[in-house]
Image (tube, rainbow, N blue to C red; front, top):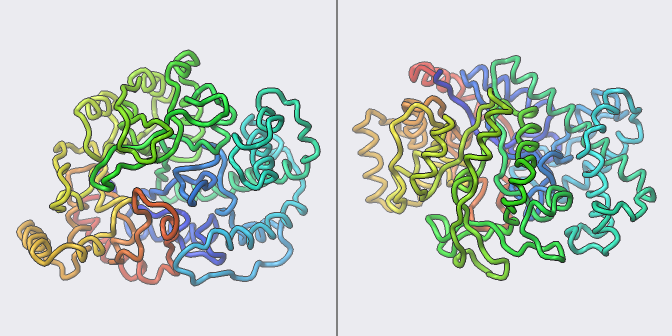
Length: 483
């Protein structure tokens, strides 16, 4: 089945309160997807944002970030007595600190008005819920420092339970409440999407952040020193995006230990994500084949070594336990052939970026002529098509236009040419960043790999006005492309 979808982070939706959330605009977006003939909404990770507000450095693989909770929904549910006034409603970027402070006031009010019921009690029976509540409570009481910098008795609580956390009982209960509300609101959004023929593609980072419950509670699963700090870290060597490589800082897995545990750590992550999403995209899939191991003492990612990972052993277990699961493997970049062999062995869809096939600086343009893939104009790590095109010299721009015209795409707006080319691809799935559908430039870029902090992850829509104008045209070209 040929399908079209849109890539748009939840945080980038319009909102009454400074950041896209699980409120009225998420339901309106689903309605627009349906009207336009789309069947997939791809998002970025929803887990608690860590360093640099990156969704790829989360505090937990299971918890959701409270910043996405809709205050409008809390009012509708009766947990807030008054409708919350608008806050940065027309903003075109997210001020994470201000939004957190604003929402925190109302989340605490909702907590005070909340009465525990059976649904809540069943939710908190999941082991991770209480552990995450303790983790975040201790973290907040340690000025948000990483767990490996806490005093020893608190740092060791996860192993010994010797520290008396009952002094933080109210704070722990609040954090469990927040996770319950997040889960309820997200399932409501997902259910509405599914009822309207829209599937949600979620995202699992291959690595987890050192500053997370994942690592604190599973220290033997990672290569850590006695002080709890990584001895080796993850990243990639120099490539198209960065001359010094990308030094992500995530701890490397202790694959020998994971094997002894039947790779349960990964099975648990997949199991929970399958509750939240219809399709799971695994970021940096190539690390199931080989991963770049960087000594933690190195300041860049230049120094390191490629090591083989037990990808077949892990995926044999995944497909056995979850036979109906649909996984998309992010297999971009300069890869060895074995990565594709691994992906194809399990029938996983890979990813290809149309922008790269026209970029004279990109040498990884070739891809298999296969239906079993997801094709994009660009990903969240790319410039928008308009921004990328304008950054090319005149000779390259002319060459791009001439080539597209030969293929039958001669729209005046370059983004539209790329959108049509992508939709006409042989690929079973075509995913289009919303920015390319409304011809936005680099002001709407989501992330620049190899850089930290603002403006990464901050872009958001102030309204759906431009998107609504394009819906009719999009419906037509999706129909023509037989998606």
